Image 1 (cartoon, helix red, strand yellow):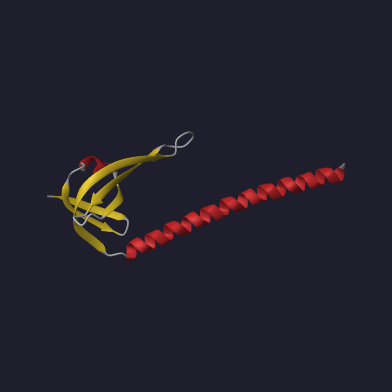
Image 2: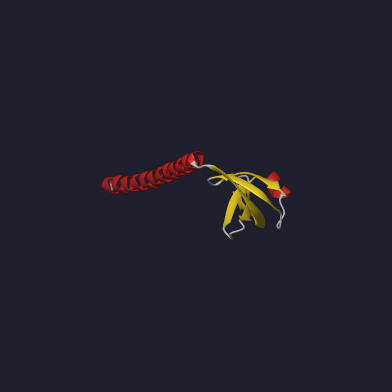
Length: 117
Protein backbone atom coordinates (compact mmCIF):
# COMPACT_ATOMS: atom_id res chain seq x y z
CA UNK A 1 0.00 0.00 0.00
CA UNK A 2 2.86 2.39 0.77
CA UNK A 3 4.28 1.97 -2.74
CA UNK A 4 0.89 2.85 -4.26
CA UNK A 5 0.64 6.04 -2.19
CA UNK A 6 4.20 7.05 -3.07
CA UNK A 7 3.55 6.38 -6.78
CA UNK A 8 0.33 8.40 -6.71
CA UNK A 9 2.10 11.27 -4.94
CA UNK A 10 4.87 11.22 -7.56
CA UNK A 11 2.36 11.32 -10.44
CA UNK A 12 0.45 14.23 -8.87
CA UNK A 13 3.70 16.08 -8.12
CA UNK A 14 4.94 15.66 -11.71
CA UNK A 15 1.56 16.81 -13.07
CA UNK A 16 1.60 19.96 -10.94
CA UNK A 17 5.22 20.58 -11.93
CA UNK A 18 4.32 20.21 -15.63
CA UNK A 19 1.44 22.70 -15.33
CA UNK A 20 3.73 25.14 -13.52
CA UNK A 21 6.38 24.75 -16.25
CA UNK A 22 3.81 25.41 -19.00
CA UNK A 23 2.64 28.58 -17.22
CA UNK A 24 6.23 29.83 -16.89
CA UNK A 25 6.90 29.17 -20.59
CA UNK A 26 3.73 31.08 -21.58
CA UNK A 27 4.69 34.05 -19.42
CA UNK A 28 8.24 34.16 -20.81
CA UNK A 29 6.91 33.91 -24.37
CA UNK A 30 4.51 36.85 -23.83
CA UNK A 31 7.26 38.99 -22.27
CA UNK A 32 9.60 38.26 -25.19
CA UNK A 33 6.87 39.05 -27.73
CA UNK A 34 6.10 42.37 -26.02
CA UNK A 35 9.82 43.22 -25.90
CA UNK A 36 10.27 42.48 -29.62
CA UNK A 37 7.21 44.60 -30.53
CA UNK A 38 8.47 47.48 -28.39
CA UNK A 39 11.93 47.33 -29.99
CA UNK A 40 10.41 47.25 -33.47
CA UNK A 41 8.20 50.27 -32.69
CA UNK A 42 11.10 52.21 -31.19
CA UNK A 43 13.19 51.53 -34.31
CA UNK A 44 10.36 52.43 -36.73
CA UNK A 45 10.25 55.92 -38.24
CA UNK A 46 7.53 58.34 -37.20
CA UNK A 47 5.23 58.63 -40.23
CA UNK A 48 2.48 61.14 -40.99
CA UNK A 49 0.09 60.74 -43.89
CA UNK A 50 -3.36 61.95 -44.97
CA UNK A 51 -6.11 59.61 -43.83
CA UNK A 52 -9.79 59.25 -43.11
CA UNK A 53 -11.31 57.58 -40.05
CA UNK A 54 -13.30 54.69 -41.54
CA UNK A 55 -14.13 52.58 -38.49
CA UNK A 56 -14.00 52.49 -34.70
CA UNK A 57 -14.32 49.51 -32.40
CA UNK A 58 -13.81 48.48 -28.81
CA UNK A 59 -12.75 45.27 -27.17
CA UNK A 60 -12.83 44.21 -23.54
CA UNK A 61 -10.64 41.96 -21.44
CA UNK A 62 -10.83 40.75 -17.88
CA UNK A 63 -14.02 40.57 -15.91
CA UNK A 64 -15.18 38.02 -13.42
CA UNK A 65 -12.75 38.17 -10.51
CA UNK A 66 -10.55 40.76 -12.25
CA UNK A 67 -11.09 44.31 -13.38
CA UNK A 68 -12.66 44.73 -16.83
CA UNK A 69 -10.57 46.77 -19.24
CA UNK A 70 -11.76 48.38 -22.48
CA UNK A 71 -9.43 48.65 -25.48
CA UNK A 72 -10.12 51.24 -28.18
CA UNK A 73 -9.20 50.88 -31.87
CA UNK A 74 -9.56 53.21 -34.86
CA UNK A 75 -9.11 52.23 -38.52
CA UNK A 76 -7.58 54.88 -40.77
CA UNK A 77 -7.62 54.72 -44.58
CA UNK A 78 -5.02 56.43 -46.74
CA UNK A 79 -5.97 57.97 -50.12
CA UNK A 80 -4.37 54.95 -51.88
CA UNK A 81 -6.86 52.65 -50.08
CA UNK A 82 -4.44 51.13 -47.56
CA UNK A 83 -5.98 50.73 -44.10
CA UNK A 84 -4.32 50.68 -40.71
CA UNK A 85 -5.93 49.90 -37.37
CA UNK A 86 -4.27 51.53 -34.37
CA UNK A 87 -4.93 51.26 -30.66
CA UNK A 88 -5.87 54.64 -29.16
CA UNK A 89 -6.72 55.98 -25.72
CA UNK A 90 -10.34 56.32 -24.63
CA UNK A 91 -10.03 60.09 -24.85
CA UNK A 92 -8.75 59.97 -28.45
CA UNK A 93 -11.45 57.42 -29.32
CA UNK A 94 -14.12 59.81 -28.10
CA UNK A 95 -12.68 62.74 -30.06
CA UNK A 96 -12.55 60.89 -33.38
CA UNK A 97 -15.62 60.27 -35.54
CA UNK A 98 -16.04 58.05 -38.58
CA UNK A 99 -15.60 60.21 -41.66
CA UNK A 100 -13.06 62.58 -40.08
CA UNK A 101 -10.22 63.46 -42.45
CA UNK A 102 -6.81 64.78 -41.61
CA UNK A 103 -3.25 63.69 -40.91
CA UNK A 104 -2.54 60.57 -38.83
CA UNK A 105 0.85 60.08 -37.20
CA UNK A 106 2.13 56.69 -36.07
CA UNK A 107 5.37 54.95 -35.19
CA UNK A 108 5.15 51.27 -36.04
CA UNK A 109 1.98 50.12 -34.30
CA UNK A 110 1.98 53.08 -31.89
CA UNK A 111 -0.61 55.81 -32.51
CA UNK A 112 0.98 59.27 -32.17
CA UNK A 113 -1.90 61.56 -33.08
CA UNK A 114 -4.46 62.80 -35.56
CA UNK A 115 -4.77 66.36 -36.84
CA UNK A 116 -8.22 67.04 -38.27
CA UNK A 117 -8.47 69.11 -41.47
